[in-house]
Amino acid sequence: MKKSLLIIALIIIQVSHAQDKSAFGSGEWFKFKMSYSGWMKAGEATLTLKEGMLDNRTVYHVVGKGKTTGPVGWFFKVRDRYESYFDKNSGLPYKFIRDIDEGGHTKKLEIDFDHENQKAYINNIKKKRKSVKSTEIGVQDMVSAFYYLRNNYDTENIKEGDEVSLNMFFDAENYNFKLKFLGRETIRTKFGKVKCLKFRPYVMAGRVFKEEESLTLWVSADKNKIPLRIKADLAIGSLRADLEAYKGLKHSFEIQFK
Image (cartoon, rainbow, N blue to C red; front, side, top):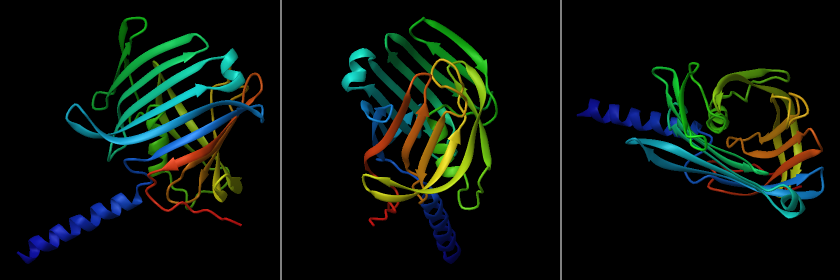
């Protein structure tokens, strides 16, 4: 009996420790405001994380929405929706949905991941076409990757110039996603001054981004690793997103009010 109680106690401690290490939990919600070229209101975006069910598995379900507003929305209407269902323990995605309308350019895809057989089953709903692609080990989608890195990237011992990479599958292609650490910086936000980790996600240069080093990301240097600011140099102008509201954080948000 004593041994059974000891085993149960150890399991509880291990589970509690694993949960405490997690940077996020069900109920987390972010809202961002976006501006174009530093001053013009451009739009807003939200990220919502909840616990859900998919094929009788308990998963995290993320819904990301973005839209243009104000003067930018008058000339270029955007209504984007991204969804990801990923494993609560491993962080591996099971399903990814991309439903976008960007100035009349529309796309609706559903991708189901089979990690055991390293396959992605793609359903192009708009074109009524299905296909199967091989994937890399530990593949992530563009949404699950953000949450995976928050939980698995060691930010305590990183040094300026360090890079991390992971396998990502987007639309119907595999590519190697890289993230470079640029250093530590304290930035002023609407909530106060916040110590941040500054990163450079490498993107594909072309129609949208000016070059592969066009994106800069600031996340809080606390246990939450909250995305606070994103700057992007576009082919025409620049875009900036700042965290405007949040709720459901797993840990205390470390803010310097002075």
